[in-house]
Every structure is written in structure tokens, then in C-alpha cells.
Length: 366
Ligand SMILES: [Mn+2]
Image 1: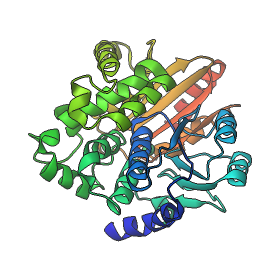
Image 2: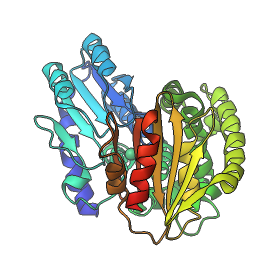
Image 3: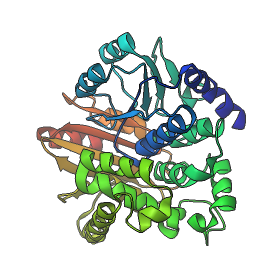
């Protein structure tokens, strides 16, 4: 594993070596904790080593680089563009980015055949490997600086993307240098999420996206780059006061939905199906939490979002169904849809009017 990681980050280090103080850098990011923590680590690295304050550009979608990003990049005219934890960058957008800037993508989703860019993705080496983007950024940071200052950020992003198993060295580092973050946890496993200060911080930062969508993610990232340490966040400093308010809103709603789930969930063979009815984007944290109670079942949670329906797929401990495949197959014949992700956690999105078609597909595949 160590050796693969070393090889994966070599091109990233070469890319960063080309940057000079005074250059303009834009970091394009998505909305979830893994993406904003990755952006924060790269931002902090460039600020420390080159005194560069990168422009942070949020994409309209968490999984793809959207057209509006291109408009912003055209105005900013960066020499370098770094895209973190976003799996889809279509050819025409990438070509335009390449016209003005040198481009690096750091990602951990199913690899794409990108050309003429720096592509940092461990799955190019081994398609089974699972390492969150935040962890890759942490390993890149480690090549230059002492990681002590960013350990909490690296921990939040990696934990949020369920990277506990393969990122041992990071959690060992946290155990020895920021013990209080993982205290009372002898073993580093999923329980960490519900049972540690690091887990609480992950939930606090995620609540920004949950309660406020894209704007929330942008605000959360701003705190990640400004806060000196996590103590400031817990005290509501560096703009974190509103973050704590969002957390309390999200936490209440979360508990309400757990009860609602028990009442309204439906089972189709191995699939447990539930529609989230909430004004907040609770689907993904709820899915992650509920999946821990499962053994051989597949959890399918969906929520309406404007004209679309967003779906999260999760699976129990002993379930071996490939959720990336399942997500892709359930929307195969649905227009204007997209889906995919990882073997153990995936998602999809389709126009709400096709809900019955989606449910029929799901039934056929169960
Ligand atoms: Mn990720």
C-alpha cells in the first residue's frame, strides 16, 4: 500500500514543483467533506510554501465540473488548475481549462482516460484500492511540511469518505499527535464516527452542506482554511459560529428522520428502501449511519431535490453486491440521469418523473 501511494503522488509533487511564487492557482472542488478537506489541504500547502492564495472555485455539482466553473476560470486566468475529488470532467470543459492553464486532477473514483493533464488517482494502479482524496492530499502535504497543523482536516475528510481501513498511517499519526480526537477508541473502525471528537467534527462540517447546500460547503471550506485549529471551530471562532448553529439544526432533523425511517422503510427482498422527506439534504449522512446497522441488506435512500431525485446506495457488512454497478444499472434506461461511485457506497440522480421506472428497475435487480 505504502508503495502504491508513493507512486500515485509522484506526478502531483512534480506538478507542484513547477509552480512558482506569484503564479495564480485555482482549486476546483465539490461539496462533500472529502472534497472541501482536500481543497483546504492543497490551499494551505500552496500558501505556506509559495505564499500563493489560491482561488477556491466550487463546482455546481459534487461529482462533475459544471459549465459555470469555466466562466469563473476564464475570468481568473490561473496558470494552474487543481481539481479535487470530482470524478467527471467532460472533454470540452477539460480542453478549455487546458487552453489557459496546466491542469491536475486528484481523485479516487473509477479512473477516466484523461489526456494532457496530471492525473493523480490510485485506482489507475489498482482498481480495487480505496483511498479518499483527502488522504492523497495529506500524503502530498507530508512531502513538504509537518502534517501536525492539518491532521484534524485530514482526519475529517478521510473519515467522512470512510477511508479508515486503508489509511492506517494517518490515523496512527492522529493517535500519537492529536490523541483527544480519537480518544476512547482502541481500534480505528467505523465506530469512530459516532464515538469520537473527530466524528463530531466531521458531522459539524457536513451539516453546512446538509443545511445550506453549495453555499454551506463554500462557508465550511472558508473555515477550514482560516481556522488555526479545531478548537477554534468548537468555540465558534473564525466564522464557525454559524457552522455550530447548522450542526444543531442538522442534528435535530437527523434524529427525527431515524425514527421516521423505522416507521416507513420498505423491504424488497434484500433491499431496504426509504424516502427522506426533509427540507434539508439529509440523505447521504442518514444512509451512512443506517448502513452500519445492516448485515446482508442493501440500503437505498432517496430524496427529492428540485426536479430530480437523488439516491444513496449503501450495503451491510457482509453484503458483496457492487453498488457502483447497481447504481448504474438502475438508471440505464432513464434519460438525463447519472450514477455510480464506489463498490461499497454509490449514488444516482434522475428526473423525478421517472421514479416509478427507477423503482421497477430496482425491483428487477434485487
Ligand atoms: Mn471522495
